[in-house]
Image 1 (tube, one colour):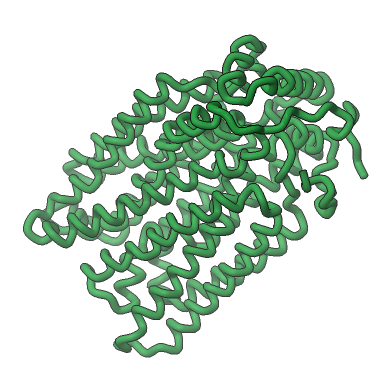
Image 2 (cartoon, one colour; image 1 turned 180 degrees about the vertical axis):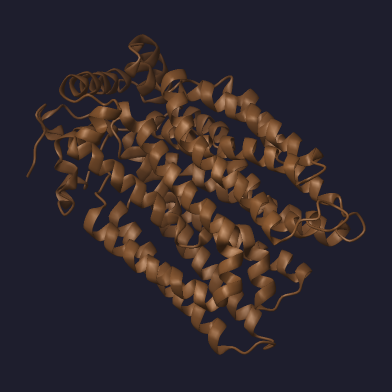
Length: 490
């Protein structure tokens, strides 16, 4: 087994136990405020699903199929840029200040979209929102992971995904209510759908003004006294100082051993490998096809046989199951191996894809049960994805990288995630038109078999260790000994 040049984690004094105390309420408050970034991520990416049909009408923005694709994908391509630039900004400026800036960008992007008289202005607004969404998807999980005790890091960092699906559900419910009640009489109501996103942006901005900075970022900048004061408010008595000592020790020693600038990362096989694994996790998470349902769920359900209004309502079912399974996932994430969670997820998602493709092929057009069978299977797919893959993806990406490359590694991984998302969002209507629902989901099934093999062969275990222990194992290569259960059963 590979061991660290600085000594194994086992040789270090263990941290005091994480006993109950008032610090948990403080951690919960910080997580709640920060994850309004996730809520905005979910709302702003999902609201287009129900607003698109109304805003595309000739008396509104008059969008053809290409215009619709541009309106959807402009946010997604911008999110890819925001993911990598947001990580770099948070390294230089701080996690907290970066999130405050993102709140202002969320608000400004909403204003552009709401008042847009044409596609060009809408795209400007969507690009601003995309930059904010992409940066938030990088910075918020890192912020939470760096604040969390390792024993509950999964459930705390995973709350961001919980807020993402809550935002998606809120967008779909609001779209369904507004679209069915006023969509025909007042075709401008799509602007109201988009405007709701301004409210959580305001909460995020003013809330983060009162939140602490990441103690690990402060240590990396040499501001240990500030980091200690923050840890004292977020840990049980007697734990803050030993944890600060561990963070400082690993940060200082790793800096001496391995340069973590861009040249250092790409020239070190262990750092380069973990970067490739992170990018692979992001890439395959998008090729489950989950965001095809998120952006074009109404279109898929209409193609399955629902009316336009019925599809808006039916769209609520996958969103509800996302929230329910996210709650369950938060409860189990710190008790089940991350690798097993990924393998279960990709296995179940592949089965769901095969069932959706088969049902779409075998059930004839016009069959009264076809739309409902496909809806049930889509709900099962979304539930499997949310229960085993979504939270595990974001938590794992937030914890696998060493501190000095964490924001860059997370940013690169999420850049690949968003780029994959963007191309899929741009071309999914064309794919559906060319090979139909059945062909699309059969293709997703093949890709997810490849994802299963990737996880089995390459993705290391991260549960049950501090970020500093993981950092040592990454830099020495010990983390790649992935079939060593004794390393994770803490």
